Length: 214
Image 1: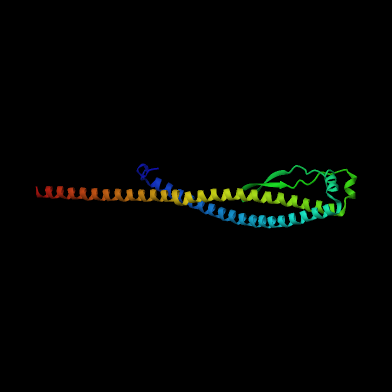
Image 2 (image 1 turned 90 degrees about the vertical axis):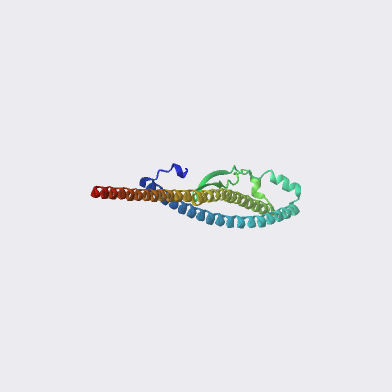
């Protein structure tokens, strides 16, 4: 709103000052929220880095276990065994609230039960390989959950930063300029009123002197 359209009244001055107070409280809350979001972002980021490092180690061990199983059982035997393994259940996704941000919570799913008795007789090397890759599957889901949360937190941090910047650098300075303008108009009105009083007084004095002379 242009300053020329502001009504220079005491009511408008009080209203503008209240808006400044509310804006400053909102700014403080946004800054606190941004700090909390950043702290949560780095906490989850550290956890994601740890999981990624763990994933690399698990993948290395998993492929090593596959090579051992292949050496002991042969590729054809491994291929036949793979047909008996249980399927992965669909992954369920719900949501959770992280500092006011809705982030996904990944249900690890797991594997469907199997009735095949052949799985009970699997060689130890194959069971070891299965165990390794089941662990890899769980870590991949954990990483997906964490990285999705990081992306959403980062968007919320940027949005909060923009809102805080708009309040701090646009709204509050504009309201403060309105307050200064109203006070300036008050000063002008007081000066005009004072000048008018002096003029009226001078005229009254002149008229009084004229009456006395007559």
